[in-house]
Image (cartoon, rainbow, N blue to C red; front, side):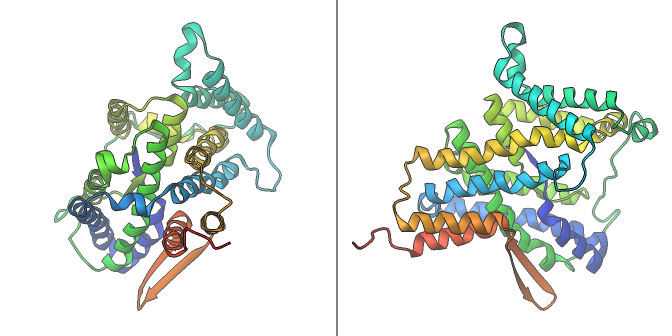
Length: 355
């Protein structure tokens, strides 16, 4: 599983910064990591047998579908297909990326068979080249960037102080991303045919997520979350090696010190990323559907219809529930809200129906 900065924490960290500056923001992110670690320990002590009862296929399937379909608007807006007038060059870049990715994934043979393993990279490069030819790439940031640049690290007691002034604003969001964590690991497990929630287990995966988030906050970075994009890449390429993820992490760290390369990657047009994301996000959603089919979920049962309907509409309809106490507010939305409601309904509603 690949970890990256979480969008769920943007608003809480911004609010925490207004309350207590960098001190509160960085301390809050570190404490989010500590919450992950505490919950990992609790799961380790409580065991894992409860997981199947809480997360049966009727919950897992819609959760995975929501992850993929919830990201779909991002792909569409990146291309610009939101109802306004779109530049034909943007459409061409997206289509080229989309088509080349498909060709590499399906038709690569012989000496070019290796391209089946890296179809997304091939598609992005093709779309990037076409974008450059059409003149829609701005290389100004690349020219201005240095060849080597040191990221701006922060250090406790040196550049900022430990402070609890924003903890109640930032930390509660951990409950939201933990739901996301479970959903992504469940999706990835379905793709590779291994129950990652049990082996290596949520206790270990949450521990890793917690340590990573704690270290990120310690050095002045954002809280982490599991990335669904990587899940679909694994599914399309059939490469699920942990060594590959370790190597990707090392390459990402090296990129952070190469100013021009970072600027070159940042210059990739949104339409190119949108073109490849159609496959990325759609693949996740299809895997959710496969879970329901593989486990032969019976939709003649009213209970299963109610649970899945509620989850899909809440998860994809933009629903948000905000719980406010004094100056502290916790918002639960999207997949997290759908998962919570789905679990409650599945437990509360009877399995057997009367004739």
